[in-house]
Length: 95
Image (tube, rainbow, N blue to C red; front, side, top):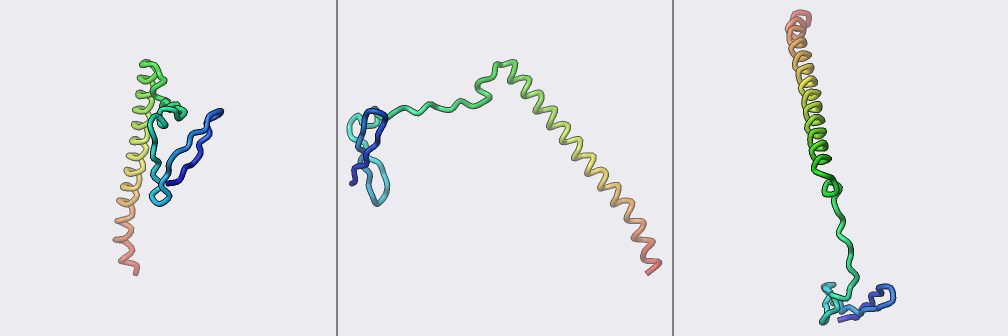
């Protein structure tokens, strides 16, 4: 085991670390004396219920618009292919 110093402002704690497997071993109450890292709050958790509802509606509208665009693209490509097939039929007469 190796002792690694961990400075936390004024205090220094010495953590036991296994050099082979890199596991940190805590003695009695060492873990409790480590500084607490604040948990990051997600953006959505800060919203009021009304704001969440508006966000959900906007996401649904965006999804619908994207779906409509994809449908138009698919329809246009299908129409284009339908227009090409007769030309391929005519081409065999000229080749």
